[in-house]
Image (tube, rainbow, N blue to C red):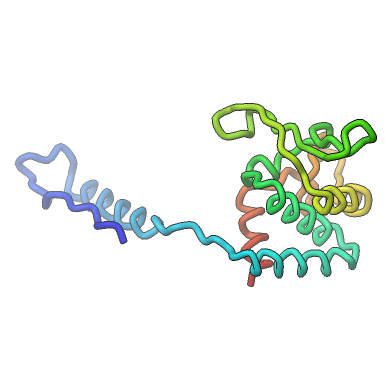
Length: 174
């Protein structure tokens, strides 16, 4: 564990801030230090269990279950970051063809780490899950003001937020 930040005690003769501001700063630092936890990493069996669970749920055909399964398949199979996966636009998915037998994603520079455009391979399982979601689930989530071309939508048809993805993974992982 990290050592807590140690500051000199408040000294009215040398401080440029009030005692109240000093106390608030110390409390903020203590809260931040408490949040400095290592990321939780799932084991391979835990991930496989999670994917099996979402695959089973998606068989029911509910739009959110189809979306969650497609999103988790994509995240797991491609190693995409949360922001890269949730902001995928339909034209950036390159489906397999006779000339190009493997699917891939064209990750936009504005969503990629380091603002670098890159191509990422996608597994057939992820492509199948995305195809099923876009064919059966996404149309039921679409609203007149839904973002154009965005693959993954929220229950209300809006862009999904980073916290939505994290909440979904945590909820499904329980």
